[in-house]
Length: 412
Image 1: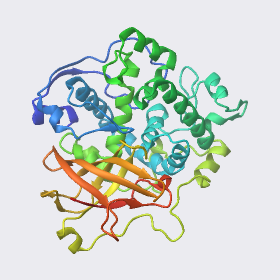
Image 2 (image 1 turned 90 degrees about the vertical axis):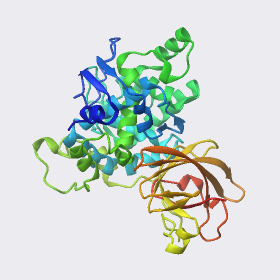
Image 3 (image 1 turned 90 degrees about the horizontal axis):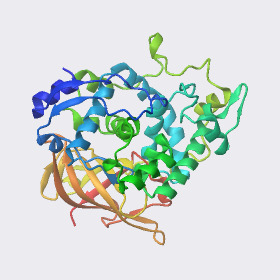
């Protein structure tokens, strides 16, 4: 059963026609001012309640708006029609994300932007658009040169993973500094800052979700969000995602297996030597635990759980500034704020403070999404030091925070 059929049964969503659902890869040339693909739907108000809270770079996605919820579901539908392609992109991401993430962190770009090249190029270094954009981040020649990349016969740094990612970070930082919003920065990356500022001035609106944009830019952020949710939070959508796609998303990655002709992980014969070096050589900025420190805080014993503490693993950290939203997945059943919670539930936490004097970061969870009940509950938990029971997590360097950290949470 496909995603839209599942929605029809689960929420009363009646779909009469949906076009362009098979387009998985980004085509930079398709930047026309045509309307969105025709989607004639009658949406049950329960649809917005069935979706978990979603954030982009710490900014809340307004899924209470029917149009926003529908566009996210539509973006999920496009990807869930491409089972094997999504699995191959997962394989590429497993190779490239450990290289991309520390570069984003060094430039203080939110890690959610690691999903942008999935939309731009399906993480393929040799990708070329009809208009001439090249590489993982799909830079046009003029933009690439302005960002310091060399383009010469036989050597194009747009195809070098490390150099092009550093260039993309410089560009994203420039866009953010001009626009003051990561969602608008993503839109400007797709459509150009001049065109976006023109839309903002004409419409007197600075919220991406309420701007009237061309078809591609209007869908662009949702396509990034779809990859983020499918790769980091797919279990929260098991009532929407077809069983076959769930199997591909949960299947262990096996890059050493023999793929079919269309499933080659990386076109090694065509890749530039610099890119191959980037894939196989650790980047100097790669985030590593300090000497004597493990990447994960040890798991609790059963007594910790019965005393009211729960454990959750960090999935996404938007940044270390106050007010940023971090996403955790519970790693075992337990009790939290007087409620029975289960492994796989999603905990949304706010960075309350970062104290450089004591090297501590203070996190407070204000809501929990139950993956089983498909419902968001208010929550009041604080992250504590498992060794002392006190609030605040002591870190030698807050920049070392990364996906995989396990924290203890309690009601205080």
